[in-house]
Length: 435
Ligand code: KIV
Ligand code: ZN
Image 1: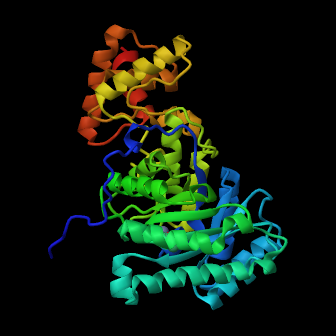
Image 2: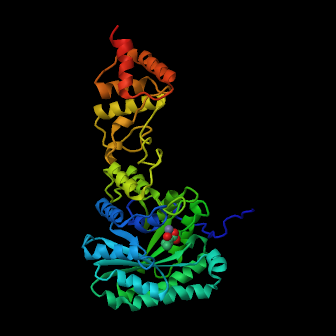
C-alpha cells in the first residue's frame, strides 16, 4: 500500500509551545478500568477492579473512569457496587463513558445514581475515516448526534439532583478530524450544555485515538484549538493520547505545553493496541524536573505488583522507571561514573540529585540501590568495588581495583552470565583474600 503525509496539520507559525516548560501538574484522570480494561485479553473481574480502584485512590487520582456501564452488565454492576458500598472517597470523581444514544445515556445516568461526584463522559467519533467509512454520515449529521446527545444528557440532570456532575465530551479521533470541524462540533456541544447555566466547566477531551503524526503536530492541533475556541474560560482542555508510534508520552507532554490542562491515561500505559498514555512516565518525568506531579509514586514496586496481578500484564524490563533493568548498569564506564557520583552525594551535602546515568534516585520511588550495579563480563573495576563496598563493607584499596575487576570479568566471561554479588565476593575471596 501507499501511505500519504498526515493531512490534519494546522498552520501555526507563531506557535508558543516550544518555548514553554511544564511547571505544574495537570488534572490526572485514570482510564485504567475502562480503556485499559477493554484492551485486556482477559478483562479484570470485579474483585480485581475493586483492588485496582483502591490502588488508584491510594495513588492520589481524583478522577477515575470506572467503566462503560451501558455497555455491559458487569460494568454496570461494578459502578453500582462502588456507589452502594461507599467505596469512593469523597474527593474522587467517578467517570463513566457512553455513546450519544438516548437509551445508553439513560442507562449511564441510572448507573451513577447516588454517587457524590460524577463525570458523565460522552463521545462521538468525528474523524474523516469514521464519517466516510464507518458511519457514512455527513458533518452536519455527526454534529447533530453530538448536540442531541448533549441536550439529552442535560435533560436528565434532575435525576442526579444530589450529585455533583461534570460533563465531558470527546470528539473521538480528534487528531484525525479536520481541525475546523472538531472546533465546530465542540463549540456546538458546549453551547448546548451551556456551563454558565448548569455551573462548572465542560471537559473537552481531545483524543489522539490512534497516533498518526509526530507529536509536534498534535501539540499544534491543541494550541490551535485552545486559541480558537470561543468559550475558553468555560472549558477544561483534556488530552488522551495512545501510543501507536511510541510517542504517547511525548504527545501528551507537548500538548501540556500547548495549553492542555488535564491528562487521561493509564498506569504503565496499558490500553488499546500499543496502549494509552503512560501516566507514571509523564508524572515521573515531571518529578525528575523538580515538579511535584501530585501522585504518590513512592512505592512503585507495590503499584507494579498490584497492576500485574490485576491485569495479567507484565512490565518490560526496560519500561521507564518501573522496569527491572532501568536502574541497572552493567557497563564499566557507567558503573564507574555512578559510583563516583554516589560517593560524592554521601560526602558532599547537595540539595539536588546529580548522578550520571540515573535520572532520578531509585529510592524516591521505592526501588533499591542494590539492583543498580550488576556484574557481567562488560563490567568494570568501579562496579566490582561498588558491590564489594555496598554489599560486604569491603573498602578495596584503589590500586587493587583494576586487578579485582579484571578477575571478576574473566569469571563472568567464562560462565557466560551475570554474577551475583555473592559470586563477586567469592571471586574476590578466592583470588585476593586467602593468599
Ligand atoms: O481513544 C479514544 O478516543 C477514547 C475515547 C472514547 C475517549 O478512548
Ligand atoms: Zn482511548
